[in-house]
Image (tube, rainbow, N blue to C red; front, side, top):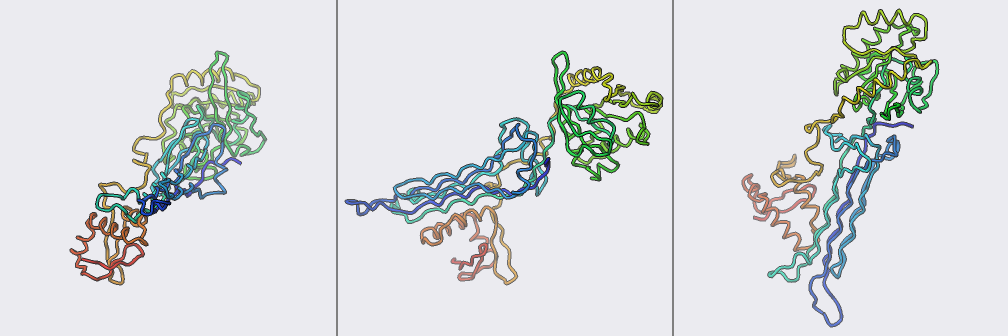
Length: 428
């Protein structure tokens, strides 16, 4: 099954907790601190794999979490870090932040990797808190929480040429005639419902990849029919080959088909696809009336666009078309699909020093509530079962300016404030 669009929830691993421990060995009754650090949590990494052609693997398992890091051990032994979760995707996959639509990564090469979420760092063991004033600290950090994010994966085929046109104009017959691709071909509409790729070679040793894409219908740019699922795959192509049934056998006017397809390409919201370089192909020239229809079509056509008359069925003029496509591709460069403005500035979702790490507001019950992502990491990395850790947490709050701001808001000594879901007594 061909799947080219999925949504996922991903979460990196939590860091392992640091350990508070002391040496207790024979003949060393009062040994110093020996608690090791926790290992960092696993990262979430996406990697391009040219052997894949669909996102089907992600369709039925939409929650992916990297392993947590191991806790620190005594004797200064660090915990093992969580194994990175490497998710392999087809080359041509774009990864979006599903919340704001920004591009996180565009995988266009085999083995290309993109680190989307970093694992939480391991908590420090009590060895790291030793100082001249406190030679036996009974304090250790909990591991830093992992990061969570909702993302969207879109597969956009990496093809040089895209065959476009109304249903049943002969695109599948054409790609089967010029390449080794074997798409389904039948005498009814929409025999092609998923893209087919074929490699075309010329007799002067040039080659390129052609995508046979499902037929367009009126309203495709607004999502009608196969809609965006079809148009998405045109975005990466350098050249469009617009195939037109010049016989009019389906009861449609060839020029009306051309106008309709061009309009759908121009109305696509992400990019004006009608501006892509295009070769017009007049197909089914072996059928009665095609010559007359071609002359009428040329009279109506105002654009100075090359038209090549062929018959995919009898293979007339196919070599001319193959070489014409190769010649035009030689003049076209592969342009980047996304501008720098489309990308998320950073892939790491954590507090930055210049940002305010907390907010204070009064709750419905009159108690001041303190929240914020920067504060959350300090909170979750504190072991509140240890008195020294609680005192350190209080010092961190003062360092952030929370005590001073609470005083300015009128909070008195002994009153209750709430940090996330935990109530604390304010000590001035």
